[in-house]
Image (tube, rainbow, N blue to C red; front, side):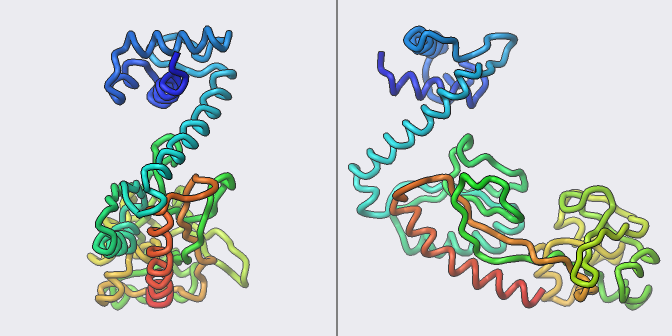
Length: 304
């Protein structure tokens, strides 16, 4: 039995949830995967999957073994990369993920510069507001906004962003500019639900955070760009992250208000799951991107 091949098939089956899906991903027939996994189970003298219904689920032993297999396969891949020269010359592909608007404003320009400087490296970008699991989805680097609950991963802080309240000059001229969070109770608002649960907006008061219930919301929406567009159209006041409204603020289409009541700035990190010696392609990207993103965020933190 080729143990490494069986481990690869096992991990893919666990991640995909079925032998057939793993087979499609790897280009291996369903009988081959089923046979290889069965051989592995006989070798270990314990079942690794609970075979009930159409989707596979791991047994407790299977969960432990799959995690160990991931680590072993990662070490083998790292060793092959060193031998093939990846650790001597930056080359290969990096997979990077970031929130959509943040990635477009702060990451894509850095990636463009990086690709121009390192011709042997390719980058696959996944811009999504969904939080992706780095290990399961084979992500090399991720931009994370907010506190990091998972301390097993390696995090490099690159800056902070603000949560801001803003409205169009036309709206504020017509209805007045709120001077305190409580003044919002007399205004119409656009709620961006991805950041806020319900209709509660967070402000600080005397250095301590407190919740302020928003006024009547004319529009509840799950897209920051759409919330900004609605505020520009004078539908109401909105509450978004500073980078999401940075362009509209710079162009004078929106005006930031209640700055003295803003909650604490939100940390931004570059995150990766690799331990030990990093491939040169990743080290080069981190060295290149980290200071550029820090400068970009510092400028945005001060100007938005």
